Amino acid sequence: MGEIYSPGKLMLTSEYFAVDGALVLAVPTKLGQEFFFEEKHDGKSLIFWEAYHQNKLWLKVVIDYKHWRILETNITSSAEFILKTLKNVQSLSEIKFKSTDSYYLKTNLQFPADYGLGSSSTLMNNLAEWSEIDPFHLNSVSLGGSGYDIAVAHAKSAVLYQNKPQIHFEKVDFNPKFKNELIFIHLNKKQDSREGINLYKSKTKSQNLVDEFSDLTRNILLCDELDNFSDLMMIHEQRISDFIEIPTVKSVFFADCAKFVKSLGAWGGDFVMSAKFEGFEDYFWGKGFTTVFEWSDLID
Picture 1 (cartoon, rainbow, N blue to C red):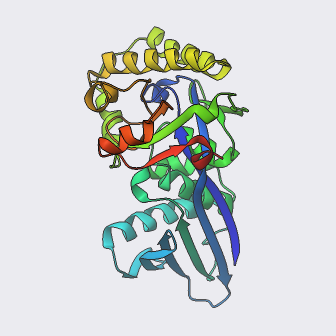
Picture 2 (picture 1 turned 90 degrees about the vertical axis):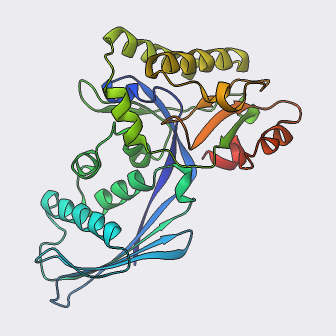
């Protein structure tokens, strides 16, 4: 079988404001999603889809792509999403699902689904690479969102990303000399980013505010001292909090934390970033947050 791989991502800056064109800094994770594929000239026009989560099978689907019907599945709702996405692939691609071949397709998500590292974006990019189509277009018609996660999966690198006036991204070498002082804490649940974006979109914002987050991103990228980086992260967190009218995660869970705490993506779940301090592991474990990674554990 052929194989394609896309890394997961962490969004370091401009959460929410990314949808209005704020500059985003995002980094790839060591874990991502694998995609395996094989085609057989059997004249049956079938898709055999298997989805694995950390090498354990969770979804099986058989699709008749001549009529776009689900013939077999163990989870109907997930199968319907796969059918919709593959139908979009057919409409955008010049080479896939155009004959009577059958396709044997398999995915393996390497990280826990509740980590929020990009289970959907890695899938979109893998399918786009396989079918030779634009991953941003496939993502737009299948899921929506700002697209920064697609950029990371496609570039397989840290990126600066902006989606207005048009999509633009560039690979960057984000390798701060203080990276070994940074830590990532999982909040024990996955946040629905679409729900957060809908809240954000309901509020009136100015271009000046969008531009402020782009400036913060540029300054964060150029930081060479942890103290300066920490200050900018606290400013970023407070400005988001003031706008969306949700308390910062630090004020809710970690008010007595000795260091900054910065949300990474939609607020209320997934990962937050902080910096090491004496006894930091015991501190977070004592508050019930037992998944704590150092930079080298998580970031590629």
